[in-house]
Image (cartoon, rainbow over all chains, first blue to last red; front, side, top):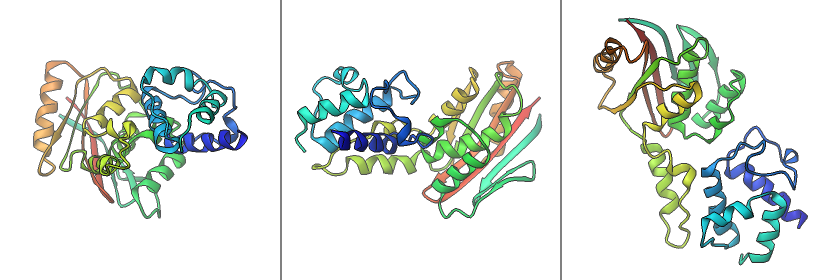
Length: 85
Length: 179
């Protein structure tokens, strides 16, 4: 799980172009949205694409993203339970 | 009309009113833009999410608009290639049937006028903005459009710009007009 969390932090920085953010700055339980990362609705859509592309998880309801993307911790747990890749 | 500040960006160089503000040895636009952002201490994280056309327009505009208040400044920009550079990048993300992953973050830049939207957001402009796709830079056309805006009283200044970018070929020529 720790490897997956680190992997997610690196992917989020790369995919969402967070050039000014270092991996160490993203805490496992910090809120991804509404916090210091400055993520918006387009970033949420990109994370939904990431779930599909890298982990084989297709979200039938994009609104579920709000629960899944609460934090790195929650996101990693969801991926572990549902990944097909 | 008076043309005041002029900013040009080409060949990895940013020049404002004939003074070189920044020059890079970077081999590509992406690295040049990143270096310019850091060196000029722009401090606007959203910059990194923009496509290349928006970064070019943003950098040129930033050099002119950063110093004074510009809430009544309209924007009139143009280019030849529209958003083609980003259009192709978006197409790459949907080319393959097996690996079909359209990118929302790229998709939102598949229109050239988004670049003037980004400038408006940065400087909190609620003025008119327009983007034209022309065969070549037509200063008379842009100035004529700008004059109408100024004479109507809808804005006190107009930032006009030719921001052309396709792959590694880019040029920005942006200037401020007042009556």
